[in-house]
Length: 169
Image 1 (tube, one colour):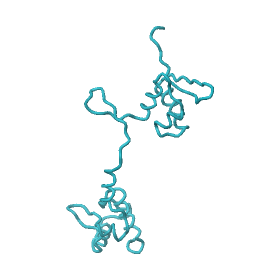
Image 2 (spheres, one colour):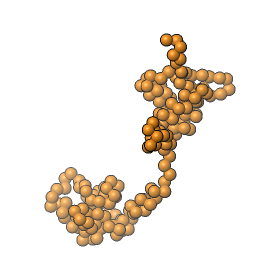
Image 3 (cartoon, rainbow, N blue to C red):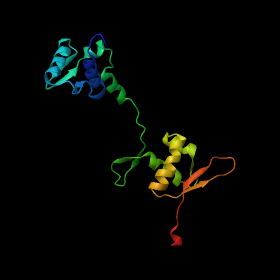
Image 4 (tube, helix red, strand yellow):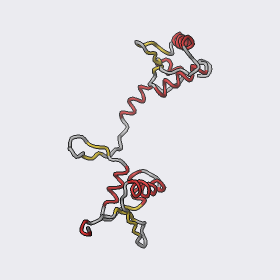
């Protein structure tokens, strides 16, 4: 790529590949008007870009010559990636709502047996320090939940949301 393009052309092409799906919409700040047109003409004369309507797009030849990943390859690949979002029914029952990691933690901690740090780590995919931070920061301080900590011999410490009964009022 270094032999074919100037530094500015490289930046423009890489931005088009990484940010705008092959469409040239961005130029470095110091390149204005006539200089932009010269860059476009230079790339077009080598058939690395083509004008489509009002926009300039990278050509297949550009992807091949510069050994860049073809965006069509990634579009097909992305469609095959499984989505790991646990859906739950919303209150209206029509559209599933996305369940957040915070909600997953609350659900596990609401169980009678509670949940251990390793269980919360598995459920959220977070590291131990992140789970502990969410327990103390988000659930306790921000949401005001009362978290019980129970340690039984020979097992991990278990945490659960303390249920407050209305009988004491």
